[in-house]
Image 1 (cartoon, one colour):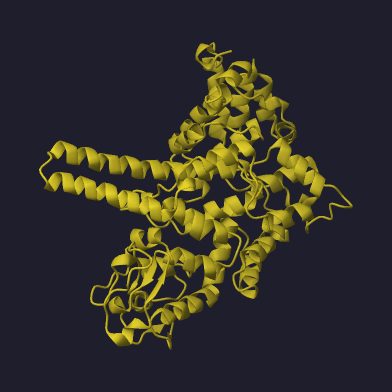
Image 2 (cartoon, rainbow, N blue to C red; image 1 turned 30 degrees about the vertical axis):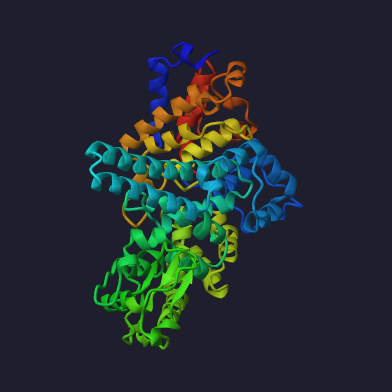
Length: 536
């Protein structure tokens, strides 16, 4: 049946029934009985996990449970499965169709240097056309072409991110990539970040998502996307810009109220002078400077430390003087900040909130912070401590889903390993729910608490998205016209083993609503609209 010839499958009464269930999700989801929670990571070799337990692990560690993911967890057992998620093969092997789509993108085929030079050439052509009197119309057309190209590059970064989130076997790495992109947030709505966003995720964030936090922090600091977004590219001696220094302490490491002062922000801003980037040819000579400064000059890819712009005045940070000078002072400052107990606490709590609940148990945060400190910021070690802690195992099903988790979870459940030929509808559904990828304008990133995503307006929008996924998700495969004719224009969620396992644990009200479904689209809509589907 063609999607555009579907009968009106959802009656007003059916929509009202689903909407009633949906609005129930605005209320706090009841926590599971703590007495039934596992006290430690179970020995699955001796006692296999129940279907409910497997779903809880998959919803927490991955972008959403699917039948194939559940089968893999059963086959490997929890310990081996978690080990594989914490240390996945690199690069992860995606399904061939997904790999092909990623490989076809311009951001995959061309280097960052080539893309940057292209945009620079396009800008020069637009400026030249205007200056040479070719008419404002031609200059405007060329400027619009630059904007179109930048938008295209940002859109391709979104497509690549969604393809990997849906189909990568390294699901925890993908979740942590999104977590860190949000933590070290840059917005494509500012300056040239649209040009750099794909490279920022690919080079700075994803390779370090399960690695060392200190390495990740420096990779973010050195990237043009961050240097542009938080203005450190313009931070120089005599022209101090505190934006990045402030956010580095407040949002990236120690957190508000952790003990650092405005004087520390100012000192860090002075330390960071000269930290920027250059788009000159790699073999171009360094900028002219006094001979005594030349030894301090550093160029690594696009990253540049320019001693001529650096303030060499002595600085005191967190109560102690910095002994090093130049770029070495930057390294010393980062080492000191990352080693602070406040940083361990801040990162541990943010991880616990992301994976567990709005108010994670203090003991869980302390356990995670201790692992962070003990391992010197090794994220795999830190995450293992978080995910396997007794307090975490008693916190199942309390994390309200943000739009990313809601939409991606629904698609993974509905289509499993069938690769979408066009993920732009998925991006559209996420946008509809107010969480566009790389679109948060302020450096604090998207919030994750239930109060931020459980408003009546959000619930109404989610119901609309649920209905689209329930009835018209064949748009994901519209690039395959013949297959679209042979396949129904919607998934049959009731046939998914993971969906059946969920329903068995749901409230009587939710099961009664599903029993009233008159057809597959109705059942899909009620299922995706259930309060239980709002949490993970």
